[in-house]
Image (tube, rainbow, N blue to C red):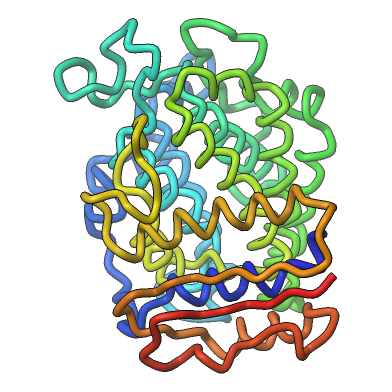
Length: 359
């Protein structure tokens, strides 16, 4: 189903990209508290020769991403200046979106973790989003340490455990390697090829997405039950999100700052509650409503094995659609029958984009 329906994901992504390009700017709009976030290992405390990092405090976890970006910046200079083409930007941007939209708080409401009226910087171990993100923070970070590109030895970093369920999380390089060997190998493969002068941006993206998807699968198997803490719409969105990431991976979606920050404009700006039904959520933009609906449709299509023809109508209201030529090429290349992917409406003022996928 994945290879069959990749064109529909491309059309959905195309709807998200509006015509105005995002300026590369490290503002709090996309990266909350970025300037207050640690940016080097010396910003963390040291005990017994190890850097101690508490990933259950938002700035501390975000600091792991900042260090990773700083340490890998020189490897991306051949693609663009100022670290603009570093595809690891997608990780902190997504974490910042989770913080800004209230998805890192305690969904059980039994503690004040993450809430404005309580400990705002706290990341709740009961948050499904926070636990899934842990696997997209700790594993890539510790694999980078193990690869040598971080400039310290593998035994010099220790992550503090959460307040409960400690055995579900790996805390250092050795425990992550023993608990999640396949995923750690995939992250190490990315960093190995990143250090190779002959590696192309496209090849590196494939290694990134292989590691990314593997991390999510590891986390989902462990924390699926956390979705029970949420409303039906929010739990459904979480499941939809995991499915669409498979399609973004298949399309080698470039997770650089400009594309991800623009993509996030179409994502839900708050946690969904009972009664929210796209495309009729009054405090969401038209684009956010339509993309939320589209993600759900894509999940349903992905889960279905009983139909021969699927038509997905994505209403883009009054947005101006834009699909980068590289993305359009990927869509056409991955379409099993080129005539089944219709991109004629893209790049124009349009109210409806239709993708017809024939099995």
